[in-house]
Amino acid sequence: MEIKAPRGTKDVLPVDSYKWIYVENLFRKVCNLFGYEEIRTPIFEHTELFKRGVGETTDIVQKEMYSFQDNGGREITLKPEGTAGAVRAFIENKLYANTQPTKLYYITPCFRYERPQAGRLRQFHQFGVEVFGSESPSIDSEVMALAMEFFKRVGLQKLELRINSIGCPSCRREYNKKLKEYLSEKLDKLCKTCQDRYERNPLRILDCKNETCKLEIENAPLMIDNICDDCKEHFEKVKNYLDSMGVEYTVDPKIVRGLDYYTKTAFEIISNDIGAQSTVCGGGRYDGLVEELGGPKISGIGFGMGIERLLLTLENNNIQIPKKDGIDIFIVTIGQKAENESFKILKKLRENNISCDKDHIGRSVKAQFKYSNKVNAKFTIVLGDDEIDKDVASLKNMETSEQIEIKLSEIVDVLKNRL
Ligand code: ATP
Ligand code: MG
Image (cartoon, rainbow, N blue to C red):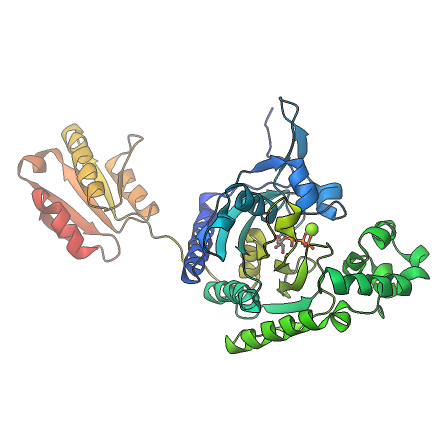
């Protein structure tokens, strides 16, 4: 019986993998330009890390994690996002003892048990950054500027950056009281999840996708109108720095990250063309998270960007990713002696960083030429038994069809001049 890939997973085939390589290289490049370094953390972690790091009340922890017991009886979870692992590694490896801030980026697969649809998979991939050890609003702005610079370079000029401030534990405590007061009479109209959130995590109700809940919270008090002076000053500076950097944004008071250790800046980058799945990037400040996970009192901020959603957005905007060129040289051989010789030539060319190939399934000469076309070779070298002794071969430019005779012993120099 044929075995299919699990639901919600996708193969990245050669027809598409060049796009992945392109965006990955671009992301690395932009991160480097901003002074970020790569971190790689394990695909699986102790389940407890995500329970504490992502939060017991979140959709991720309540219903989306791939968790299992390993053969040693440990509770293990495939990473559903990148932040918790990065924070764990930051603490465990004592990166806080280095000069701060610590500016990290990652490229990682993530796993969430969700209902698969366009832009929503069970194994998906994220680009992300995390910065530890700076409370300054300038780093909030830089993190957002980095994401927007990446989008600009990849060709997405029209994405919308939406920012908000969700305050700090002290002003949120006051706000939560106000919000709960407002919601108390509407509680029975809210969905089951929001009823649970009411006690544990009321801010998150503002984020509910349920239409009835949306209606009920329409006139709810907003966090942004209730932040303390310190948070307000921080937010004003974030906006000023974004202005200085020429990064456009809108303030969206409905953006929340509803956990105590998420603080101040929260943001999303939205594309308006892939329907329901419009958030390509989400991030924010988490000044309480490092401490929550057992580290020192050190602040953090970061974002996660869905790579599949990024590629989908590019497609919907008709942005073409430059296609990888074909190989430089294909060697057509006529006869056994020529075939033997071709291996030496391939070796020499590859040593000189010239990409090349030959036939490997016993094609006729005509079929070898056809295949050379198919693999998009820039030049074809034709090698015949007789010509080898005379140190000659014929070189055909596949674009112009021009054909010349070259000296085999000078092949590398000849090609270097022409490629
Ligand atoms: P959504 O509201 O769409 O479920 P989220 O709030 O769960 O998103 P985050 O946890 O902030 O998303 O993850 C950051 C980014 O990762 C998202 O903006 C999105 O681009 C991407 N992402 C999240 N879940 C998936 C998924 N199941 N499949 C593909 N991409 C995803
Ligand atoms: Mg989600």
